[in-house]
Image (cartoon, rainbow, N blue to C red):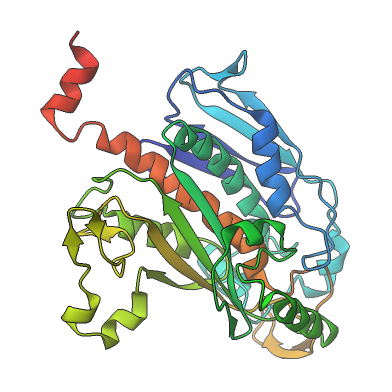
Length: 357
């Protein structure tokens, strides 16, 4: 499946070392101002390069092919393409018949009987640039309603934020949310890279100013779809909504969010009750495994089942969570845009507002 969403729906295409990657975004209301500079700025946040990311030097220049006229959406599908310009496929020629531990090589080969070994092909995180492009369109829609989606790195290699500052995250080289741990987190990433290894990390996503009522129970709950969106990102191993795992250690008297005339006293629920947004901040945490592409020798097997030693080459992120935070943010925006459009028909009064004068 290569599509995500119901009303606001995007489909991605392309492979890591193919000619291009891209997406088709459907369901965008006509008349939305499409700021191409903003879309590019979102892709620039995720693009490779820099001290703490893969050295693959891609410009990630996005080109809009359809669905926009005189700067506004036409209501038809918006197609966007990003050409790959810095592939080094020869880095993977020595592993074309090997299964890289921690990667999707083994499962893709056994499912399809064939795989693109150049950087993982379709299973590569390169595909996520297309999701960020779609998420930028979603953000333009959310901006019309004052809804803000933001993210940052909460933890790296077991070092977690003491405090959360989303403004600081925008300035941090690794999008770290906490000034007190920013340097130590960068140090852990550097140490892992120098040791030809990698580290895991966690990301916090916050969604502000959402209206009450987003989410389609029972089988398209807001928290369920957000979790689905986050788990679809390469390297994600767990997702928490609100208090998350810790809620299993609390009593009901501790976990319940009391309500006053001024709103909720606390936010253990993470802004979602019964699969529906309650108007409070939506908070979710996403946990990424260490990058599986490391340069230490590893045991594996080839397509014939023979045991071999793998010595990997190429250019890889030492910590997925850094650029993964931007992808998680984009996927959250895609979900909220979809839920907004789905919610428009929730009552007969809502329908009448559109069709009666």
